[in-house]
Length: 127
Image (cartoon, rainbow, N blue to C red; front, side, top):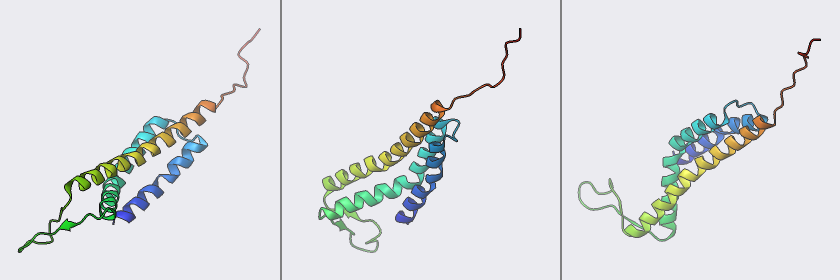
């Protein structure tokens, strides 16, 4: 589920980036903000979970599933400091991706909007 949500979220922003690149976005800041917030809601939790779990387990971290009737339902990390560090890194990355998307759409849309020139072909001077 995590990978699916991340892929769908990243593929969903491609039309907005192309539209910003073409200059078809009238309000680049508002569109970039909406897309970044939507992307944060869609892929933020899966990115946080994936990154934190991968960092923690690659460093040799393990989980304690507990004992008794409810064992396995709640797993607590054995090394709490490493788990907190992994969660911090995951939180930075899950916020960094939407921020980069926001900046990309805003800058591309703003740049193309500022380069557009309106030419009036009618002459208003009447003598």
